[in-house]
Length: 247
Image 1 (cartoon, one colour):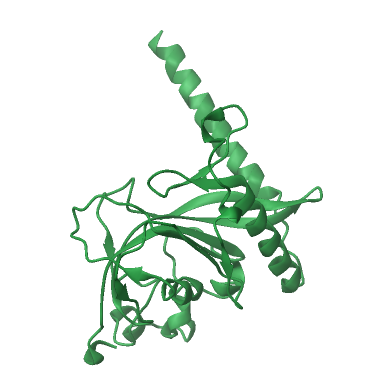
Image 2 (tube, rainbow, N blue to C red):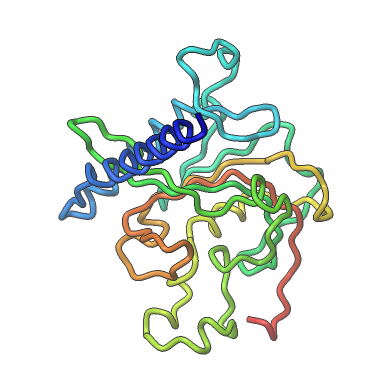
């Protein structure tokens, strides 16, 4: 009986892995990057229509078989704002600090978040996000916020830049998801301890052109972020000004 269970488990894992590989296989990079940008924008709009925020602000997909989510509003109904860069952000009602602390573009921040990356693809005429993979997840991982992540901001004196051996790795854009930095400045930060329970305050969706596009980038996860869009579901636990001598 134990052997049968192991065979079933192995088979299910193989199916999942093959399905993920199939997803990637269906993606064909458009020669014209403007086409990819269009796919990103269309996929973002579809994502906004197919997901909602639960009572703690977590992004959840609508179910076609479970009626318990029928009373939730789509993300597209939560006043999403689109910036000129194509970045979309949503401020969750009743989940913002009052008064809160303004977030600067080079602050030291503390984030509780769950984030994923996606490829926007045209599959048989259906444009949507495919091949979702985890980027950073402190909620289901350590349960503690992350402090001063380089994908938000990296200082010129950071050892990664100082000790870089290629021209690309000496640039801040090699490390930063610049659309995240841009959109977080629209929010304000709480002043919470590491052990405080989370109540996610918003969503930021960064199209690939406002992330790494087709440029070289830091190896954060072992997977390429070429053409990948990012979805961040987060709460800013704290922010503080970065000392001038640490830039």
